[in-house]
Image (cartoon, rainbow, N blue to C red; front, side):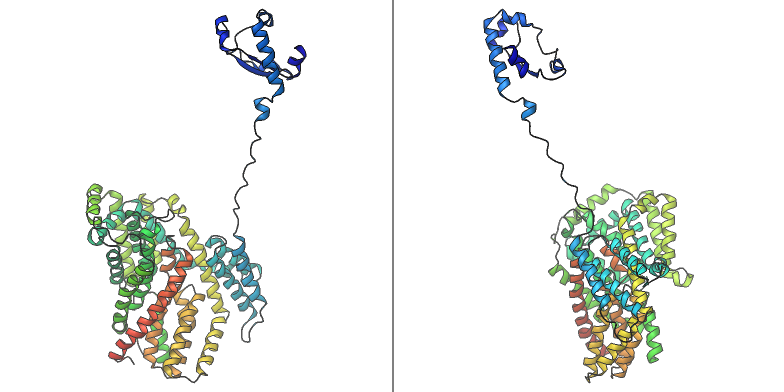
Amino acid sequence: MASLALSGSLSLAFPPKSRSLGLPPLKRSFSLNSPKPLKSLDSRTLHPISLKSLTKSPFHRRSAIVSASAAASSPSPAASAPAPAAPAPAPWQGAAIKPLIASIATGVILWFVPVPDGVSRSAWQLLAIFLATIVGIITQPLPLGAVALMGLGASVLTKTLTFSAAFSAFGDPIPWLIALAFFFARGFIKTGLGNRIAYQFVRLFGSSSLGLGYSLVFSEALLAPAIPSVSARAGGIFLPLVKSLCVACGSNAGDGTEHKLGAWLMLTCFQTSVISSSMFLTAMAANPLSANLAYNTIKQTIGWTDWAKAAIVPGIASLIVVPLLLYIIYPPTVKSSPDAPKLAEEKLEKMGPMSKNELIMSATLLLTVGLWVFGGKLNVDAVTAAILGLSILLVTGVVTWKECLGEAVAWDTLTWFAALIAMAGYLNKYGLIEWFSQTVVKFVGGLGLSWQLSFGILVLLYFYSHYFFASGAAHIGAMFTAFLSVASALGTPPYFAAMVLAFLSNLMGGLTHYGIGSAPVFYGANYVPLAKWWGYGFIISVVNILIWLGVGGVWWKFIGLW
């Protein structure tokens, strides 16, 4: 028995009868091979006994021998426990490999394609990098800002652009105006002013999602002629309002509720913002540029009234059709809520009177919008007005700088939008856009078609070449004069051609999430995936072209434009 106890684990087990002897039921195992075996015994639970006391009872002696034998023949609990599972490998935090390969392959293939006659090597290399960046932005191997920054890095690394040229657009006012719009939206929502206005809209129009959408669409159209910056109009006024409406209706970005209302409402407000921009000479900053280039080319003036008169009928038709079409093909899951107006009224009652921060936010917004409306007379541009408004919010504590730094979407949008503006701008400076325009002119002019068909081809080429532009002004400056000249030479009525190209210079901004100033604003709210944004953008572009050339064509014939 001694040898058994020393070679294995000793287990002392006392059956229930042992209680009559004054001993508690006990089962303890410990290894005598351990350097300090007694440490496995717990003096608080073991009844003090001795080997001598065990020998006084044959019953206890037999029990000890049996338990010791069992313990020796079976592994201890510690020995039989399964080994701890290996920790799971950390998830991959880097780029998505297949989209990254697709993006790089696009650039590499185009890089080694022979350069066409009339195109410089630098222009062709920049086109390769630009298209690779666009593919990366579409497939998103990394966040958009990271993809765009890599594109700029590639252009500097290959000596295609200098560092100052690659990052030149970070001094452009439009990306900063868009970022400032996100900061305004933060204050709008934080103070509760956004919810208050949103509940008012729901109270008046909220019995149906479609009615709510139309109320926003036509409100924006009414403000369009007074605010010449679509970025300021969309970002400073309507993005905060639309976000507040979505949140108030239980539709939030990133939690699976986007399709309740937010996805449809964001896409609708964006697509109609490009329509309202095309309806008035003062509704978009680049519209006067179109009018100026038209005068320089055909020596005819496009006045504010002339523009509005020609655009009002097709514009209203588009404002009616586009929200309804999106409502059918990309519908919100919540379509009617008859109780919503009553609930909104109850929410307004609970909110009580406006707080101090709401009053400050309201006054700041009115000041900023006032400067956007009358800034031309006061020599204050849109971004300066926005900086002044944000400064007031920071000084009064309505918005803190830490909160501005936390607006990751604003900084990400600033990065990728500025990068695309820089690359697209240098494609023009390097002569690629001029070469493309001349090539198109020669091709269309050599077809020998009627002026109607020739102009239709020019319109489509002008419109869909906007995929290569991150600015309406850049596109107009690069291609408007060339296309207007060739259209006139092919027999198109010059004033008619100038008007149509000017209108389309706004409508084409709906193609992408970077084509016009309002695009990054609404896309950055993260309610609509990028693939759907581009897909529905193309569908709406076809609808707009049909409406403006169809309904518009009849209207323009009626008013004597052609």
